[in-house]
Length: 448
Image (cartoon, rainbow, N blue to C red; front, side, top):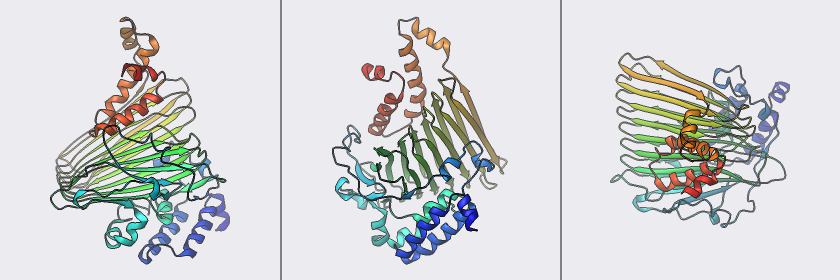
C-alpha cells in the first residue's frame, strides 16, 4: 500500500497527519472525524482526468509537489493591509497569515444583535455545541478528495454566527483575509470556514485570498454556509493569489425554506484554481444566485464547478458565470442543475459566457441538467467567442481609439456580473480589481 500511496503523491500528507494526530489537538469529538476523513482521502486519491468531474483539469502537477504544513506568522503589517478596505463602508476584518489567525491585524468583530465573528479555533472552545452541530455536516468528504483532506487537517478559519432573534442584520460586512507569505519551503494551508445565519437574519461575508511574496503553495479551503428560514446571505469569494499557487476552494451552502443566498466569485489569480460552489435548496421557496467572473492570463488554469440541487418545491436558482481569457490561459465551466423528484415547480436557469482575447486561450464549457420532476422550468446555455468586431468598429467610428474600445467592451462584459452584487462598497472594490486586470485598464480609471 505504501508504494501505491507514494505513487499517488499522498505519503507527505499521511506523514503530516501522523504528526497532527500525535498532538491530539482540538476537541475530542472532532478527532474521529479527522481520522475518518484522512482514511477516506487515501482511499479516494487525487482525482484524474478519467473522473468525469475533473475531465478538463489535470491535477497531476499538484500531486507531484511536496508541501509542508504552513508556518505561523509572517511579516505582515497593518500598512500592508491598507489596500484591503471597502471604500465608504467599514468591515469587520479577520486576518489569517499562512493559515494562522493574527489578532493584532484583525478588527474587533463585535456587532449589535449578538453577532459573532471570530476564528474557528476559538469557537471550537467557546461555541462547541453549535460548531459540533454544523461543522463537517454538509460538505461531502466521502466523495470529494480535497474536502476530505481539508477535513482531516482542519485547524482554523472564520466562524460567523448571526443569531435569529428579531431578524439580526450584520451592519458591517465580515471580511476574511487569507494572506500567504514567502516561506523557506512551499506551504499547504487548510482554511475552514463555518457561517451560520439565523432565521430572518441578514449578512454579507467576503473571503479573500492573496499572496505577499508567496510564490508556490497550496491552499485547500472549505466553507460551509447554513442559511436558516428566511435568511438573506451574500457571500463573496475573491481569489487573486500568486501565479504559481494551487488553490482548491469549495463553498457548500445549505438553505432552509424561503432563504435567499447569493454566491459571488471574482477569480483573478492562481496558477491552477478549482472553484467549487454547491448549493442545496432544502426548504420550500428557497432562492439562490451563483454569479461570478473569472479572468485568467499567462498559463493560468481556472476550473469552475457549479452544482445546484433543488430538493424542495417552489425554489428558484440562477447561475451566471462570465470568463475572459487572455494569452495561453485555459478555463473550465461545468455547471449542473439537479432537480429531485419532489422538487415540483422548480425554476432554474444557467448561463455561461466566455471571451477569448488571445489566440492561445482555451475554454471548455459543460452545462448540464439532471431532472427527476415533471413540473419544472429549466434552461441552460453557453457561448465561447471573441469581441464583436462590429461593436469595435462602431466605437471607433465615433472617435474612440481601438485600445479604448476593446477595453470598454471587455469591462462591459465583466460588468454584467459585477452589477448583480448588492453590497456597493464591495462591488466597487472588485470593480477596481477587474480594471487593474484588463489590458489598458488604466483608461477606465481615467474615465472614472
